[in-house]
Length: 255
Ligand SMILES: Nc1ncnc2c1ncn2[C@@H]1O[C@H](COP(=O)(O)OP(=O)(O)OP(=O)(O)O)[C@@H](O)[C@H]1O
Image (cartoon, rainbow, N blue to C red; front, side):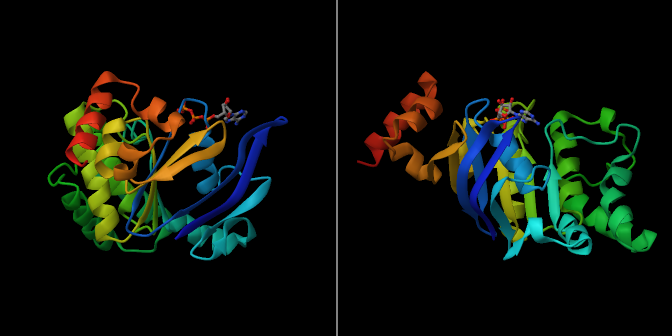
């Protein structure tokens, strides 16, 4: 479990996160949503240790990350998987080399052990036989699957995804969402995703945190989000006519 307790973070005297608390559970996919500039990226970067909060703390299964020794930090880094916007693959390396990278960096496994693990995760993301391809030869959705394979190759406890659907068509986006959710449940990972994608919110949001001006303005599940009368959430999530209609239909159906 990740526990965020009242974190504050600012830059040059401007407060961006103004006291956010949240819990993220293993086996669950949690989504962070909010308008551009609401602090989602600063929040996610704080979770992965790229920003240090000025106040408050973040604990990972009881371990507060700012108290780590160098060795503990190294250990914790290995427990984290990340999927970035745009996949962030090494362009000149093959799929196999990209996915093997964390194993080479952090483990003393033999080449054949590493290859076994790489093949296992590539199979899990339905990318068998792509080992020798380079990213430019793959579609955007396939590149995302390589990024997911690389993120889980170390068997992480925690998975962080920044806009994993950016640049994907809606159908491929759902495939990627479902894959992340399945993997999260299968391997009991604590997964936190920053997203703008309202389809993701409806489909996989087991826990949704809505940030507004650096504060947690609302928290609930995808079912709760249909029923909430929180004005800020309704304005944000149901800004399109399509989603307004989906909400009305849902509420009528479940009256
Ligand atoms: N390193 C930094 N230095 C100074 N200001 C920063 C820094 N990182 C973020 N900010 C500011 O913090 C605010 C929140 O930014 P953040 O990137 O977290 O928003 P966001 O919700 O992720 O937006 P988007 O949805 O557009 O990605 C913005 O005003 C941004 O300019």
